Image (cartoon, rainbow, N blue to C red; front, side, top):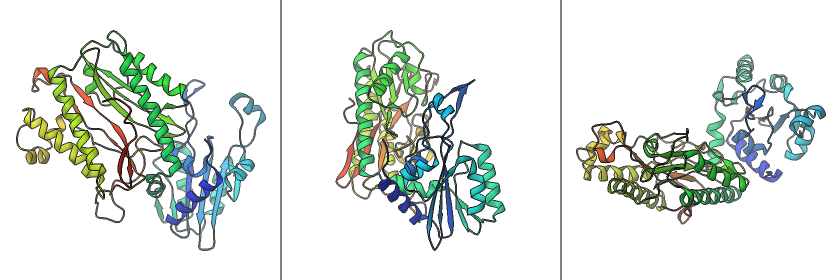
Length: 422
């Protein structure tokens, strides 16, 4: 999908409205990463750079300068090179890119440091993401240039761009709905076709094959965790045989046109739930339902969704005798973290764990109020260490997580991933 000039212009305007006067902001593209020897990973553009440019090449950058007089937008890209294009594909080139985006100036990427030296003198503020994983040597040179120009105020671009990306535009929501649909279909395929004796990687292949058949890629490495593996939160080996009666936890979501989905489902392999499995699954499902109900309410905070799920889980665990004490003491002492060690939600968008502060701007650390256009996950879970002898034998090795993608709307909340069975 191409982002049209009008959309780019609107986003740049919104971003510059957040910038201080007499400041500059620099965004770098993603870097082309080598996998091994001369083999490269599939290129995936940096999300914020993509959001502001719609440009999908490595070795590129965007510099925005805001003064009292004007706003300058400067794009940097690799030059046209017929010989290299034969091997790795067409390049847009700085001149054509300038026409596509409507930016005022364009240069070859190799001129970034030189132009930066020329253009940021006298500015008082600079926005840049120094903690980025790409172009490590270049980032250190950029910091040196900023210091040489005696710019005193340096802050992260993510603080500003996160405010924009947090509220999804209508076209972004449509892409996220498409991603959610594809992922939900993939989970349904896995539910129908999983059999005892198969391997986790075969289920992974079914899921990710459906992603590719529909023009999508995975948004994160798929977790296909059978039996005890479901108690490992980020299990990605996916190399074990599946056994009848075990639970299978699948956390898999596709990325469609740069927008992510994120779904987790847990079900018994070729059997019904055992009584202990049913108790835990039922409790996690109840916690998710309560959290979704909370998200439906107006003017609720991000943290309140987590607390609703957490309180439900803790109450259930106390009733089962798996946690000791009353709800207040369990929450204060954090004893629940033995079974539930992660938060219930995160932002979702161009990144699976999308940018945006979880606190209200200009507040004393108050949790963010959910507003229309925000998309969150709701994913409570319970995990019982198979080697923990303090846990009753019947619960050891059980891992359950249930996750959906939730769009906050004017009328409450919409479950984008509802077509994946629970």
